[in-house]
Image (cartoon, rainbow, N blue to C red; front, side, top):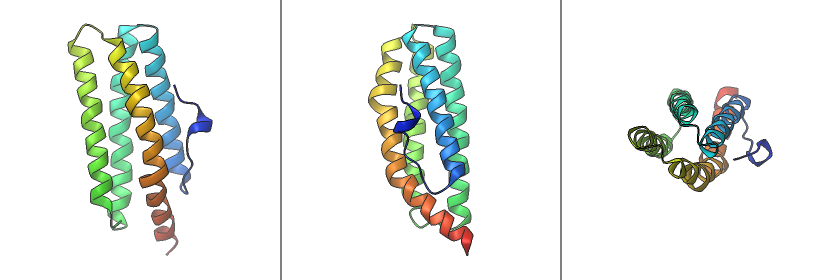
Length: 135
């Protein structure tokens, strides 16, 4: 679980709003897995995948529109994490409801990655985009 106070803020309010939506979904997924509710866990996994696709696509479109120089690096990281999330979703859905897979992924990988990603790549990206839109 992650609380809003742990969420780093960037220079673009729209990105902050999307990150807040991320943690709401992550927390719903975590709670479903902790309560061992297989249907809710599958639903929140799928919602998180759909949200993540939209989140990453939106950021990538803004980066491309403004010719963000490190776009390939940022996109490659998005692609890697989305592939990882899709793999976890597939393994959980095809298996027998390994809730420890979900909790270990969320707590041990996804949340730390999200915080680090926001503090590094998203912070730089947001500053660039804010400056690019002022010109």
